[in-house]
Image (cartoon, rainbow, N blue to C red; front, side, top):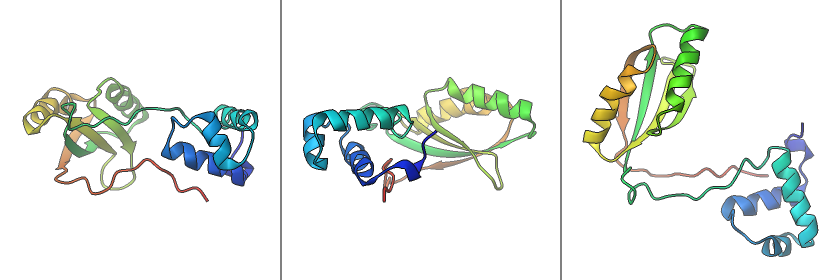
Length: 157
């Protein structure tokens, strides 16, 4: 299994460029890193095979698609046993309103990132889905008033 130490300067440059524009043409990418298109294609295939590149996707505008309300939710479970964790993790997978779910250390068990159309839609989601998830004892909701920074880009050195 490859790790960060296996990447050379050109690999890092390729990843940086693809992170900015995942749809860049192979020829243009090759020109940007001063390699042949064949060599760049082989590197991109290796970076994908080795798990450095997980995939490609379009970034959609949630405001235009009826998902403008961003809410973070702290979830505290009633018991912290492997069975409860497994049930909770399985349950969050099937709800598309839950965009991210992170098990965290600290005063609660999970941090969720959710999207819905508006506060009314979130209230329905909270009652019909969130509070019905297995093992949920308590939640704390943080509605986002302004998204100041959003990026998925990693720092590559």
